[in-house]
Structure formats: structure tokens, C-alpha cells
Picture 1 (cartoon, rainbow, N blue to C red):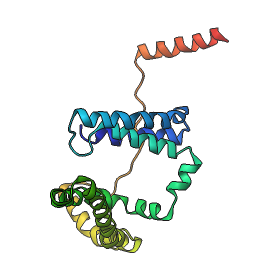
Picture 2: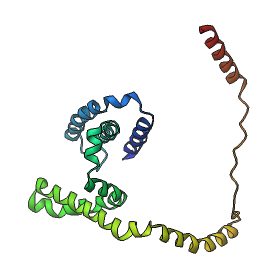
Picture 3: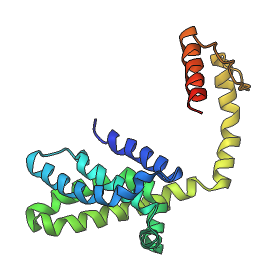
Picture 4: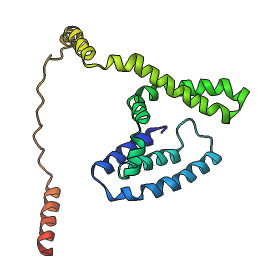
Length: 197
């Protein structure tokens, strides 16, 4: 499963935020309990990197809580945190090998506690550097527009070679008729509502 649950919890957190779900009020308590669960799980089993489900739930609770608590929104709006958020995809892509290499090099000499802050700092710095040197320049509108212009001709030739039309029209498919059993359920549900009123 790996980190799939964390991504799925991110989808759930977004749904809770967008729909202002009442479940959000329990997020701080869930996060508090999840910290202890995650620490307990770490004692029982050595998880491969980032796969302890307890920490996934802690992150989920933090995101949901941040969606409703003004004080946490202000804290997370600090300039350096928002700048890090802009570079977060690059940080996500490169932090793991940098942190692992740093820990492998420094833990034998300095110990785990002294090495971890350095590894995190190096991982963040590497991600921000990748954002500044690669991601930011490549995602500027002018660069993207130039790429689209340059790629259009070769892609059209490739599509023609593969028999794929250069332009397609999207349309909504006609709805399939409901099976008789579904129609009966709908009818019964309508009768039940009428009987209740």
C-alpha cells in the first residue's frame, strides 16, 4: 500500500473542507490521538519510509484542522511557509534521496538526533533549489507557450501516423435506461416520501 492511504486521506480532507463537513470539528482530537498511535506503531514495527498509517492520520487531521481554525491558518500563512508551499512539489520529488544520503553519512559520526535536523534542512534546500533552477523556469507561461508551439507539429505527425485524429469533439454519452428493478426502487422511495408527508 505504501503512501496510497496518505493520498486518499488528502482527497477526503479536501472534500471535508469544500463541503464544510461537520466531521472537521473532531480533527484536532483525532490528530492528538493519532500522534500517540503513530509513536506506538513505530515501537512495534519498523515501517519503510513514510508508510506508518498513524502519521498519515496526523497529517490528515492537521490539514482538516487548518481548514477551519483561523489561528492555524494565520500560522500557516507565514511568508516562509507559503514560499516553501510554492516549492513543495520539487521538495516532494527530491527530499527522499537527499535525506537518506545525509542520514547515511552523518548518523555514524554524529548520531540520529544531531543528523535529522541537518538531513531535513538539506532535503528542503535541495527541493527549493530544484524549484528555482528547474520547475519555476519551466512552468512560466512564455516557456509553456513556446513548448506547445514547438511540440504541436511533431505531435500532429505522430497522431496521424498512429491514426489518431488531430482534433476530437467531446460529447456527453446518452444515459443508459435504468433496469426495471431500479425503477421500482425509485417508485417505492417516492411512495414512502409521499406517505411520510
